[in-house]
Image (cartoon, rainbow, N blue to C red):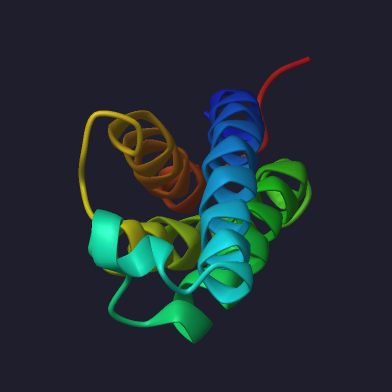
Length: 118
């Protein structure tokens, strides 16, 4: 279970990084070209999006990397990342995979009671 949490956490974090790159870039465009918000509708909380574009994927990757050695801490980090992505970006076609992978990885990491056999 720890190995599955590691793999799912890393994949979810990498996919979350892709979401973060585009989200941060979009907010940067809105800062540079404010008239773009009139066309696209803008964003509600730009600061939250910019912070979570960095923090959520990093927490997922760190939680996945820690899942083998410290499963409780890794699982908590993965679940925090999952909640952060859901609250910030919502559940949509591009975010469903990183959110579900981080959630499953967090559950697997927390439910692992003994080390995986090698």
